[in-house]
Every structure is written in C-alpha cells, then in structure tokens.
Amino acid sequence: MAHYKVRFSVNGKIYNTEGESSYPQAQLIDSNKIDMNIAMDSAAGIASAHKEKYHIEGNIDKGSLSFEVYSA
Image 1 (cartoon, one colour):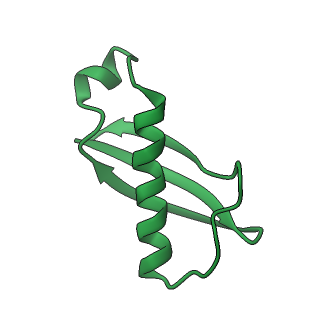
Image 2 (cartoon, one colour):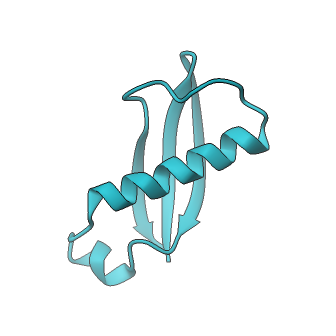
C-alpha cells in the first residue's frame, strides 16, 4: 500500500489532498523503481475522488497534477 500527497488545480484554484493506493508496493518505493505512468494514474484517481467528494466542478487544469508517494 502506498500513501499519496496530491496537488492539482481546477480553474486556477489549487487543491491538496491525500489518499492511498495499492501501487506501488513498499519495495518499489524503497528501490526507486516506480512506474511513474501507473503512479500518475493513481494520483489522478485520488484527485478525481476529491473533486467528487467536495462537488468541485470543472476539469483538472492541464499540467497541474503533481504528487509525492510514500510507503504506507
């Protein structure tokens, strides 16, 4: 299990959230062998869940999604 800190913006307003994902596993994090495409998909899912939970209208601004991932 991995813990994500996610930052993104919608219509120029910045949001920060956190969440967990099954990717990557701790050994991948520790060995710095994370597939960033898969991790980005996980971060995007966490951002989308945050948007839905708080009824944020609009698309995530292009290029605004960033994240950090840690062993949970």
